[in-house]
Length: 311
Image (cartoon, rainbow, N blue to C red):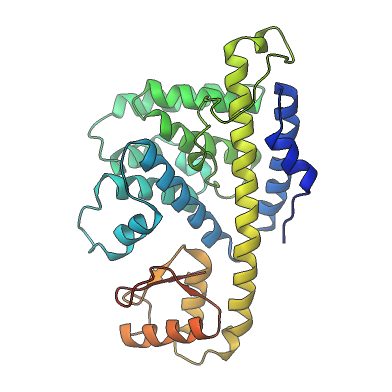
């Protein structure tokens, strides 16, 4: 399991200068990079659980009240073809980020799909301009310039500041060569240039960094480090649960049980009405109850009906 030393956690929270924030953020990203490159069998569930958290945070920033439980219900209990609403569409956008290779997300087709998913009509010219700017940002020498530019570009082309986090996460994944993007900055209220909750001193690397822009960069670096720590901690938790699921999997005799296990390892949550080849609703419900009894999965809704299961 991935672990982060306590001194590095303290370094993130006590960063007082741009240099402090840059060193701490780089160290945490290095640990996250090692985790991503292991491509664990449960990485899909991990990324989708992070997508849920990012969606809940960005929905809250947009002034809506849906929390993680409400977003799960919207996604899993809405009938196919029905509108999932603005919050549900935001969740779909984050799920798309976690499920597709970053090089596909950042194409004109990928960004158009995300734009439409959020319910924005038209916008072809804005998407085309954004794709052009993304190419210019990738030419930047530093990751920081690329990320701050992502927030600026998203806002300038009508994607909203909170979805600058989506764009920044996709661009970071492509820059680092990750097979899938990891939802990070969306769950951090201090991302996107805010210094709220970040202790800032004006001491910095260059005269340029002593301007207010330097403080925004410091805020972004600390937010990114916090997000990476959260992702690593969640991987430790889900990794343990996945190990338990894989340990009991050979005991499952239900037809199609192996497909259910794979789906649990690749997504945030499932319902008993999920279409899985070889499994009826009743059989899937019995299997989930068995897995709960074995301590291999959890019931996530707290309800006696319309129950939801996941790691």
